[in-house]
Amino acid sequence: MRIDIISVLPELLESPFSHSILKRAQQKGLLEVHLHALRNFASGKHKQVDDYPFGGGAGMVMKVEPIAACFEHLQEERDYDEVIYTSPDGQLLDQALCNELSMKQNILILCGHYKGVDERIREKYITREVSIGDYVLSGGELAAAVIVDAVGRLIPGVLNDETSALFDSFQDSLLAPPVYTRPAEWRGMQVPDVLLSGHEKKIEEWRHDQSVQRTKDRRPDLYNKWVGEEGE
Image (cartoon, rainbow, N blue to C red; front, side):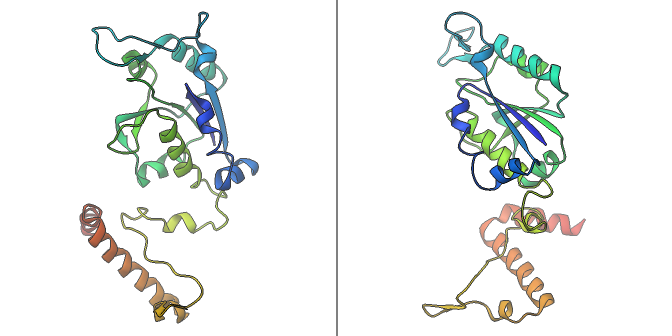
């Protein structure tokens, strides 16, 4: 998979992709992440990428020309399965969307900034708008990093344990069950006996029951979704 990211401040994204799982994914050749500085596609002495909005109002708006120039330059080199704009009014990022995006080959992400982007960019180029939550960030770089991390780890071969991602929270609309490691007893607190039993079927049943109960207690919205899916 290749992911290209267009940003006003690409320096913000250098660290998240240079460590841990995403670094290993790139070293294995399973994932490519390329950062593109929007100012490189701006004209004029000051390489301006924003301007005042028509009609007045607070804040600045990302200009149409540099974004279009960058898009068209990249699209000359390859076709993109998705052109994503990080926006608070986009589709909420969830595990189902991450699963869907992990099946793509080429993804282009435009990081939102300032007061937003000229609407004509959204109408002409963007195929999907994505939000990571109901709040506003200073820029879309952190959102882009979240998208790449959540999607990249699902690519086959990225995780050392091929089954690990299948048991993440939200994969089946349930939260993950509690987990424990050694020692089995710590300050009077014991690991549940079933996890020490070696009985795989009972362990699987315990984990499922714990996932259901935890979801019911902590995320009733997800629990109700799961109940609805089970009843279909």
